[in-house]
Image (cartoon, rainbow, N blue to C red; front, side, top):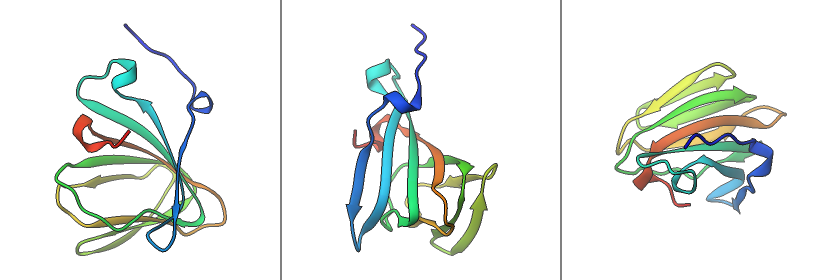
Length: 118
């Protein structure tokens, strides 16, 4: 069955436990509740000066930047990103996402079903 929805109807999970993580909202747009058997699509919003924790895990993920400006830190460097950019994070690569602008930094992130914590 096809599912159609709106981001605004999905309640966010808030992550704000500095110094590990600051100003992060996650919405699971498509996942098991919508019948997705393999992948989860999440929408993240990082507040100005917000950041995800620095971490690594055994699954890959793909990101598409919707709005704002940010920095992606990874094992061997960093890159500045903005609307229209995409990012591939390979399995086991340490990474972190940071909002470097004055506006919210929003992106879609797709991971395997085993890579989402709900």
